Length: 448
Ligand code: NDP
Ligand code: 2IT
Image 1 (tube, rainbow, N blue to C red):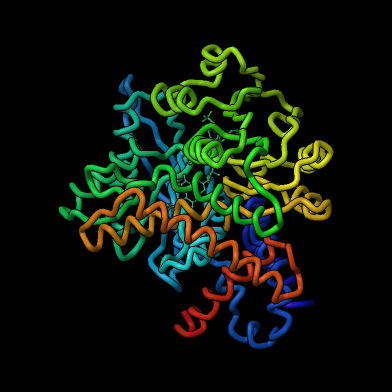
Image 2: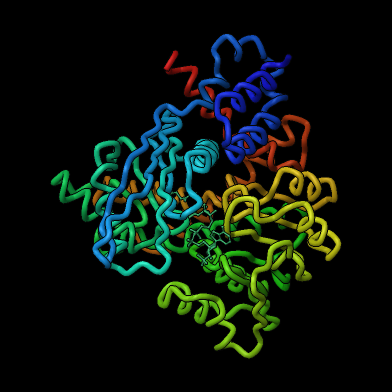
């Protein structure tokens, strides 16, 4: 059996009941087949793929906290420190009831290659908790965050592991966790990114993932003889990534007409009103029904099992920005039938393997999240740089660096796909380009 197949079987056998982790590993290993098989014995002897797929460290811990009724609640916390070959562990924290070890491992694994693609010195990690911030008071969220950090603090540090936000973790949660870290450690350091602007945060970090997604999409279209201006875009999600993707798409002259949350979705024929969306989601933390109520041009559709939501809308470009496996084969078929010619992932692994294959086979330009959503973590790394030199850069400076990073990422994966005879397969290009830097660093550092 080939080394790649052997390691995939091992991963499945050793990590039962972690389907998302299997899926992420399968996608990467399939892309790497051509690289590994050219030098199979050397990779096998060094057990490079086994080392790549086993995290350096997993921390799992209890998070007890008291709710507003005086009831003690207990949640399960995780931090997976996956790979530190090219820098300190870096990656977000997700607070969502669906969080389990397999989800955090898939996200941490993806993060290794994403962080490598940014060209910046950051290793791969991810963490989170099965806590649901929805419907909780600010005091409950604070109590939870303080308890979460009371355990996590001993495993992280500005040169060790630097968490940030992800689903359910934004500025409010980062602030509460930063305060608790500082209190326990008596140390003011850049241990988290996505911080507020008054205490070490970077301008443009809030916008970075969504903006970066559009910078990369624009470059991908340009290099394929297409233009983003005037195009209709279907976006899913209504959180940090979706909001700023919609905003930048409009600035580039495109028309995003959809967004969605966990209970329903919006079709707005006049284009999404970003100011209203921000008010509903960032300020009121409300449902999209409130958007529809305030906007006559918007249609609200309740989410229903078996229905395909935003992907049934006619569009030129699709940007999935909500969560994993939200775009399946049926959705891919609907997009192709409606003339969609480009999909770029804002979320992590939002497209199933079957859907990805269908889109690619039908000539749709497809950019995987580990490349197209790398602007968030790249700007986090820029926040780390600013914290280290105790300076802050202007919005324009950070934004122009972000733009350059996204353009470079696209060209790196484009070149890797050509070099390995898979021109236009940006999934393979991203996985190979991300892998080669990490593998070279791992080999140089000996058996560790
Ligand atoms: P937010 O929590 O800000 O927003 C998430 C959005 O997706 C919300 O609208 C939420 O609905 C919706 N959503 C979440 N889970 C589900 C679900 N299971 N089913 C349907 N809808 C869901 O998170 P982000 O915008 O930060 O993250 C979105 C995606 O982008 C994730 O995959 C994340 O890993 C990825 N990402 C985030 C980065 C960042 O910098 N924040 C960087 C790179 C990737 P509701 O409003 O009802 O909660
Ligand atoms: O998935 C991701 O890249 C993030 N959630 C952002 C990570 C970070 O460290 O900024």
